[in-house]
Image (tube, rainbow over all chains, first blue to last red; front, side):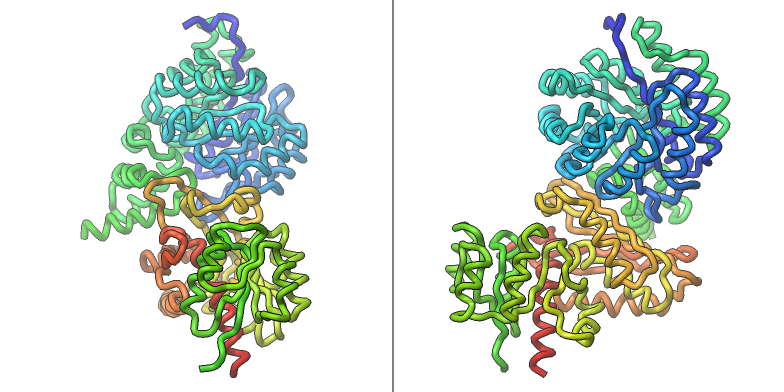
Length: 340
Length: 294
């Protein structure tokens, strides 16, 4: 693999995907501190939102320590070179949230749908493009469909006005060949000026390997997270990704040691427990379940005495998609009743 | 047996045809018109059922109205054309039952507020909110009539195949309209709605979670009996409406989970989200008719 001279945009997730393991309780001060450290390290894009995107504050997913607007205004104020992005899941957030985020000074909007449901994103992608924002279509759980089916959905998002399309491995299920097949087809068939991105989870410890496969197949943007802070076993560890890319001669514009400091001295101290490849995370990646189900399954285990990894296996078996956290408690009740 | 009220259905698609099938069984409502904008399978089917048809939209109905008048018009088209349909139909004295998200008229969730709506005067146009609203607001109300609910949130999970392009093009409308009706009709101080679309095969039956945060400690016994009687009310027009488990009570959170299986008249059974709209629309017309006949 020769990545010499390749320009790669690394996008940090710890203040959005990292909200999942933190139960959305990262404080505004912690956000500002971490975003500042990432900005100083030269990370070009930082995502800041409730874990489930704009408007995610809910009983179902958890109420955050502060509102999206408070987080976004504080972080935008702090950073100098980095752009701030916000995630939006149609069905949870609306164009009203999008307008608010734009007003806060967000540079990038990522509109996320389940990989087969891109046509719910038209109004949001249209608006983001009309507002002149960097507009990303984010196709989640992309392991569940073939590369050809993924392309169809990517073309829809591109036609609505997205200038970048993501293949999102929300379950951390993909292996490098899965990534290569999908990114290769997207690169071949989308407009040359449309960027392509890959978002990984480290549930099978494939974050860096999968991201390299994506870059090799033509991806321009890679998501990762400082200290890996993200749902499941976390996202691709950003400092490792940056170091590997530097060794391979690619250009990320990031200062590796400063990024390692940000991870070690700013992100690690806020973790409630180490983000690691636990048995539950392994099951997510092995069976293909949405990474943010993990903590919900653990809570259901504590309440109903059913092993969390068995709940997660059942969630995968039922072919659940992102956002179906509400089914977890019900499954736990059913499993507990069967056990008597 | 008194005379059945006559009804026109605008929109000969899946929803309109399912509604037609339901009308065939109704003791109170007889569908006599099917209105489309062109020849179609739905128009042909309605003709075979002996209905008058228009392929020139609502203007065809207006032109033939003197010859074949109706008491009710169901609009199963889209929010974009509803306002014009409603204006033309209500000018003729028919009551408009709006199955689109246009929401010109007051929200109507039959077992919750139809009686109140009728008491406050003859509404010319009533709006059936959204599928998620019909499935969940009876449960929000079942809690709020027992004790104050400061916040209610619903999560509707529906099969991808049951979500049409109208909803997909403007999914925010679902979120906004449902949230607003959770508060206005459901009786919560604040409402929030979330919709999840799942493409699994075979398609999953509509499933809804209703979270209510009560102001004071939940009165479990009263809430449970209120929920049970409301489920029975909804089952009168949607027999496949059922509670998945006993309500979960955790601190001041009351969580209710329901499954909505349709009758499978014309729409597939998993599409309980669509069935509950047509059933609620028909139920509204039936209840208005019963009132008028007293």
